[in-house]
Image (cartoon, rainbow, N blue to C red):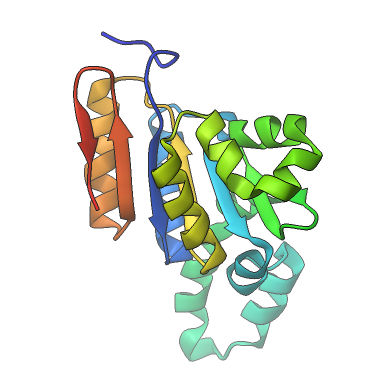
Length: 183
């Protein structure tokens, strides 16, 4: 069995913040930590979907009683993601919010990231250049990138299926013996 340090990155993009929150919750329930979960979105997407906690509470309070429970469920679903995003790296000049191990790599790259965009960071964590370009375009168009190094092939298979159910786009994973991609 391969160890997580030998596993390549499993990646996908999401358009629905609730699905991102559900994916995050599933990863945590399977033993992954927030330090293992890569998340990249534009600052604009962050503002659109992930308000500050006090803003969420204000919006929830302003909603009528008839719809409050539905909104409350959405608020609960994104709370963990807000916590993750809240401890992320904001890259000035690019308008990106980055959380997880990829943030450390991008921070280390310094000014080179600003000129090279997120592509260099994605390539640095093991993605092929064409895949990095695809994800950069998705993030620039309001999608949310999620990536992890699965602990096992079984985890990779489980998460790929879970992400498909949650309408992930451009799911990609390649291990050394079995390249797999779902477009």
